[in-house]
Length: 92
Image 1 (cartoon, one colour):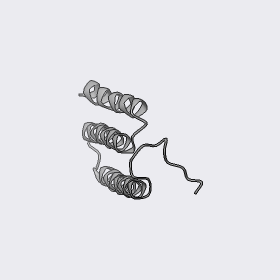
Image 2 (image 1 turned 90 degrees about the vertical axis):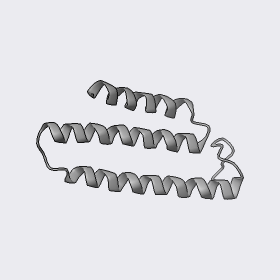
Image 3 (image 1 turned 30 degrees about the horizontal axis):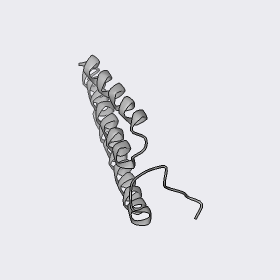
């Protein structure tokens, strides 16, 4: 199971690094990385018979990260008309 979660994490990093032109694809790959990290945390906590409170904190922060990313995507599409990173200029 550890090999599968490691492969998930590195495939998410691979997608993130090669699809850096579109903000939506970057956000989807970041969410995939978060899911793989959550799987790693749950496996670590269940193997050591620890409490699962840290996993709830991790989920809270990942939901906040997802909401912030979606708000950035919506504002970028409203202002620029697309989600290409290269056409976005913060110097207006």
